[in-house]
Image (cartoon, rainbow, N blue to C red; front, top):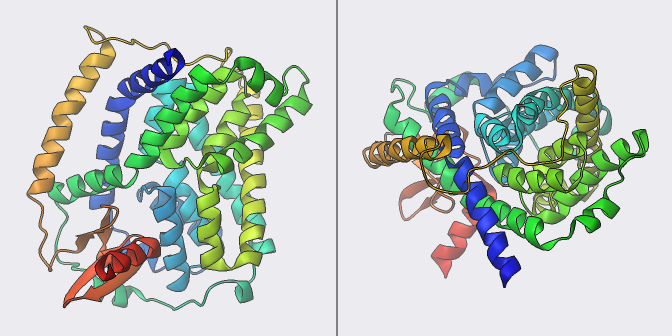
Length: 396
């Protein structure tokens, strides 16, 4: 019972340390999603030229998503005419190159990890743009339907400008969407810290063998992510626990990047793309995530900015007159303001946005992954799985 209490205590204080970073990160992301114009740009992703890859990366960054929603959006883009490689790049950018992830990494692990998110993220995008066109072909991909900018305009209310109410709805939707992933991530991290002996991790992660250790660690990171069932921002606290337990810098980065390589997502990919392409994608993802962690570590080593110690950032496990407490208090007031704005949002049929009735994510109607008409009303979903859950709930 003592170990369980210590685990829960570690989980709580880890969350307490990162509350402000999570809230500010999601709030900034919500504003970017609301005030950036994506509809026309999404209709121009029909190839994987460098310019289009850059465009898809930017769209991913401003379209912060959990791993499940990101995979569904990528599938939807492919069906609407986007190039397969470009859609996968969009998916990676929307989960690995987002503000909230960087802030939480900085808070829990330090600025080097936050910087590594972007350095390694762009390395991943470069590797994907080179490798994916060689391992996939059009006959293995889902049927695609070309969508033009004019069609996109018809689907959305292009004359209506986004408001801070819309930004608040994106923030609330994103937080609602990943709430269980974050909860599981903090709990698993606390349990790993308190209940798994350091000797186990020392035997699992090679240390002191130079290049062999570096390679083993970066290729083992995604394997642990695959088995952990934790994705999105929830990966970060568990990554912090692994770093504290002895995995290398590159191994930690490759683990955090592997939020798109978990057992549930593997099953989703199989439904989207078929078993043959899913195996190919999983192998490519594993190699790309591992290589990105390895290359990022080497870049940081050359620049002499690698973290020197396997330890978490210093924390203040108490309430009081400290920076964390003040930042959390400010974040609390910001959160209350966001809730107030969310309550006053436009929820009419003419709004270009809708709330997914299953996961709570705010969905842009023009680019919703799935839509359904039920009892004379249109519903919009971030993923086909949410639509299926909705159908089941209505038929029950």
